[in-house]
Image 1 (cartoon, rainbow, N blue to C red):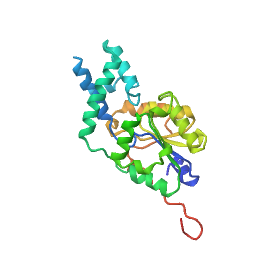
Image 2: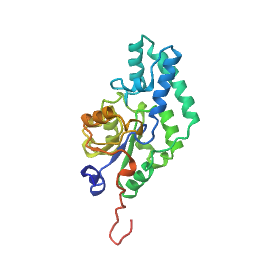
Image 3: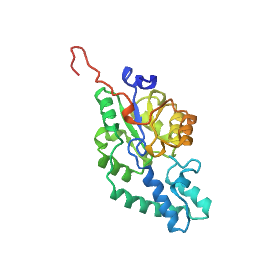
Image 4: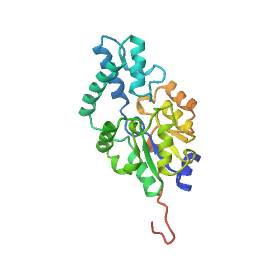
Length: 241
């Protein structure tokens, strides 16, 4: 077992999870929505070309919209409104599921009495919908679920992971973060947390993306939740939980 993960069980170090990309793979939907938005504005730019832009993976909709607006001389607000429309339509059509193994891994932490929190910069209305439809909502105490509205600054600022640590009652240095994007890893490292990178399958073939995760400071690296060890319940004397 990797040293970082051993801390989870040996010392019950809190685990903090990003949502989109990390626990639920919606990356293709986001970038396809931007592709369709640009198409409506008579701009021919593919998903592959959009994802090749610096900082877009994990950068959040406002950042990506601003970048595209500057690149093509468009209005960022108009891009955001149109992208939101396309994303909502795509999201409504699909079945939302947690990535394979994610639910079992989190459940193993709960059984082992490892404190857990969710720290996402997804807007609350969309985030809660994703949590409920994926089955993840039951995993996290409501007071330990953070969305964009809970912090002032987006990633790569450390705000969301500092707030997660505050709510868990620990120092950010005493928690382990699970992230899928370089921007998210940077945010967690800026907070002082250890980070396990588990990139979206959408980027598994992208060496540039993998290199960016390592350069951002990820302490451990896994492709799939099924690659991570399950944690056994911590038993009290006499063998009872």
